[in-house]
Length: 515
Image (cartoon, rainbow, N blue to C red; front, side, top):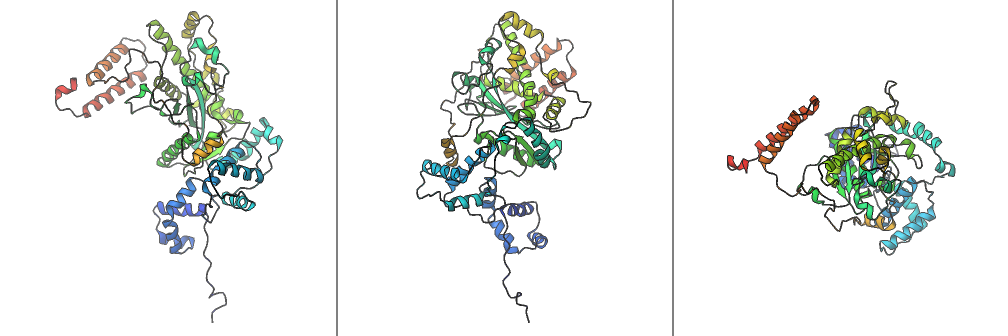
């Protein structure tokens, strides 16, 4: 005779969104369904159902539309309103702004009106379900915490950072930050820009925003992202290979959309390298993204403590800018001597910035992470941050002779350092992001940079010109004394690449090579 419970129907186990993602990852790794069922003690039909709903599960996880612990994958009847409110909520919490239930309800009504949604009622029932779907709990934000400075930074280092960084090596802990660069700012104009935020207006078109990212060990630097004002600058026409990534919007600022795109690319890069990283960023509005990643874990610095905790702000960015300004001064002096225009275009500036970024040495990076208190550098690594900052030496003396009222080189390096690189999202921008409408489209795709008259960016370069100019470079270097072996090897490498490239180009006749 069967026991009373034996005939009862066995209750089906419910899986959370995160558990379903874990199952899908195991299946993607090649594990057989039958083995997975045996290990987990679940029915084959359950695994088959999860696999069938794969695309929906991946979308919900990637776009952070539900809390990872959520078991019912229902988004509610007003998805656009929910997404807008959730975006605003994340922004407010990262800025340490206290948020209450009535505030969420009021914001929901505001977004419903902006989105032209009818029949929506921000009732107590909606609020309860919204909080449940997104795993929102109420927490008290004290005034002391908001005003915390050094004490708050120490607390974050010792508690939160230690907890999240425990499972990562220094090779896999990264920091990313933006900085503004006024690439046509010459020494004679420094005083007009020093300490100004340059929110918008006439000076904005002279700038770019650069996103830099590196790890704590100093062994990995990510290709810089340069954000300009023009989507298709003339100086980049027909150019398909650049040492930096480039994008644009009207203000040349970082936006949530651009940061999301950069993160997606970084996540894919880490997936190919088979590594999972912890990425530390500040809590500006542009960094709040509604996307989850498989190989990048975002960790936000606490409000009001960024200047103490951000490794890139401890000297890495200054080192890059000093190197860039040095090269700009060198170009300035040479062009003055040759009676050539002294301005540079956005491509030339971005290439110099990229070169300066690759030249930042490992010890500088590690020292800055140590200064932020996020790693313990070896005792033999000296605090030589100031020494690492490039100085043009005699060239700056020549600048001072040419421009008697010029400021110091340090002031030149720091010029524009207070410029904004992003802005808080407005209601209109949040609504546009929900509707997938870009508010940063460029009306004018052309670049207004001044370009040297002897450099025609649109001119076709023939094969023979390439070899002739390469021979001229080699001849010039051969007449220079004390050329480092590293430079000679690089010249050999460039020439070998060009010859290999030219040989692989198909020609109808051998004489075509010289046309």
